[in-house]
Length: 87
Image: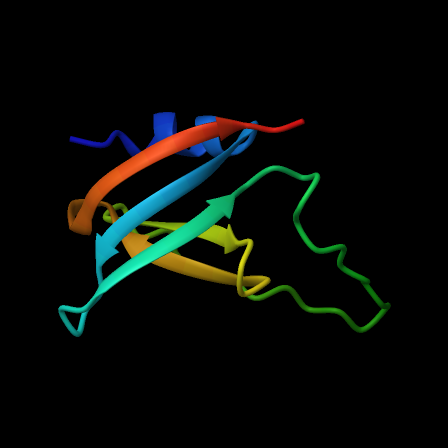
């Protein structure tokens, strides 16, 4: 079983390759991270209002390195995963 907080900590310093089952039952492979080295920079203007999202305890939000976009997957849908170091 994947422990969400431990997985997120690893993602802050590593790149993960994750294979999981999507909601439509198709299989997806994703290369993702939470390393600030890869995350997009955000510009905050005076009129900026942040979006407030509740944290789903069953899923994890990550930066997809291939699509260059935020994506999420359910932890219980993960079929396999591995971590790579960041150079």
